[in-house]
Every structure is written in structure tokens, then in C-alpha cells.
Image (cartoon, rainbow, N blue to C red; front, side, top):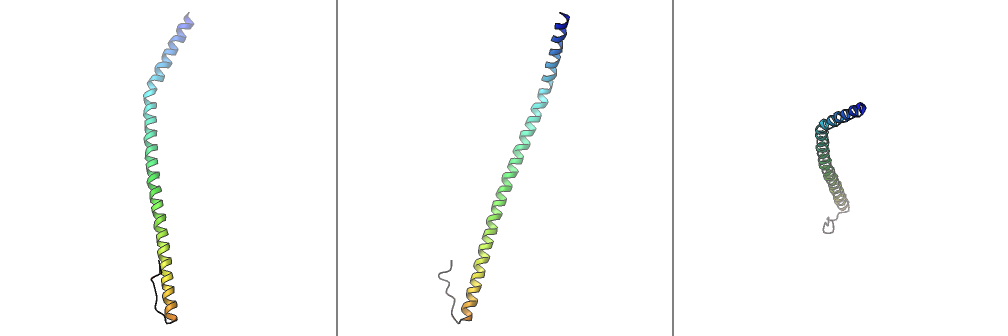
Length: 90
């Protein structure tokens, strides 16, 4: 009987100890959720910036190609004494 009483009091103490830590676990989980949400937002923002920069680089490459082609076309036409016709150039 004494042993059962001792087990009972130990279980009650263990329960109290576990309940006292529940609040700190909840705070920890909320902090983890907040940090995770912030990291997700930063990742999404960076992903948008990377995509925008890729598009800008592609545009710069296309523009440089067009400018080089037009310069070549102009030089070729001038070398052969013909006027440059840009009506078909895109």
C-alpha cells in the first residue's frame, strides 16, 4: 500500500513537471513556425528577383544580338554600295 502511494505521488509530480513545460514547448513551436514563415517569404522574394534578373539578361542578350546584326547589315550594305532596308528586320 505504501508503494502504491509512492507511485501515485511520483506520477502526480511527473504530470505537474510535464504540464509546466507545455507552455515553453508551445512558445518554441510558435517561434519555429514564425522563423519558417519568414524564411519561406525570403525564399519566394529571392526566387522572384532571380527570375526577373534572368529575363533582364535574356533581353540584354537579344538586344545586343539585334544591334550586332544591324551593325553587320549596315557594314555589309555600305561595303557593297547599297542602302540598308530595315523593313523586314524584327
